Image (cartoon, rainbow, N blue to C red; front, side):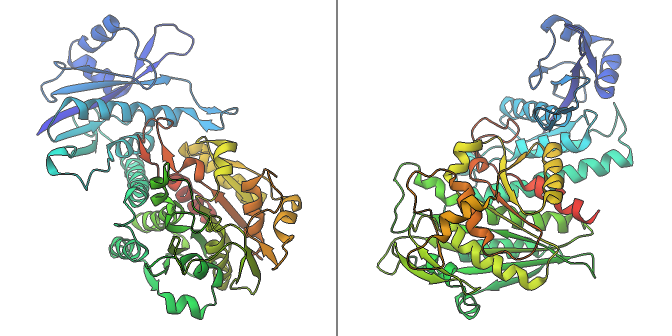
Length: 493
């Protein structure tokens, strides 16, 4: 098996052309009689997020990838709302790992310099290593990469650094679970199969699993949820997960939209790019990945994950525009657009969440195309009744690189969905071209929340990655799982 090493180098702030090796890189430079410095002086400073491959620096590694960590004084950027030093490490280590993987058509073990931030270095490495190719022939799959924290020879990792590295690995692997679930074709990830896969993942941890069937959903009078599932031959599933490692506390309840395929129903979507709607269960993927990761960390938290799972398809049984359905709390809903289905399944799940008398409810969904136009892939939108909790999740986003941005829950938007001809509520605005679609959807969900502490995250804009986040790569992004993990930890710490 090939062996490779990733080392970091900073650019000295304010000194053009000057650079600063990390401790491990400096040690390698000493061991190679200054050869590393000589090479860098020849090729010039390594730009932030870029990498250079060297072959003959040490007999212990086939190659060394030196990665640019950016400014040595980078920190919190108020305008960007980002801990840039951490983001620079993630991007640089990811670049180094990809350069190594592209170099060898063979299995490779990669030792990674902690780059002064072991957690961020670990996240960058394990997120970059993830690649969805499990449905391809063996000859077309990427060769496996084994990733380790550099902990011998050049530098000894202390216990605190090892702990931070392991936490970063768990968080990245959690996000990769969400990425895989969202990437799976919908025939591989039906509601039933989603529940089976998640149940299997939970077996390794102290997570209580309840897979609720259609009869149970009917017994709970979840008419809004059931109305969405009517057009599909696949039965709906309500998946409920409990992880309580902090008895005698109120739980945080995470609710994730689980539309395993969204055709739009009778209000059919355009054919172009409809295949990406296999990831319309991205909210469900995020919340189950979050609770699995917290359990893997053995975190002292009390968390519940609820995911209403179904498909939204057209058929002779499907809900029709103007049909009226009744939610779990007794409110009637005029379904004027069957493609606004996510808010319907969430409505019943939010009602059910109150049964646990939670400290807080957070729902997350790939809910509206409007939020993509508003924020693009830069940040997830947050709507909340609690400024205190927004401030917590906002800070978590600055640390993980998965930022959030608050949008309003004004009564102005509520009027759009309470002016219904046939029912208590309409699932879309009656006013043509009114704008504010994500705000109107959030106002609809608010009608099913009675506790003070509630957050709604619209993640439609961050569902998929092209080249916006360099350490994720192309495909379904699994964002913002690491922000959710840190958020729940912050609630109890």
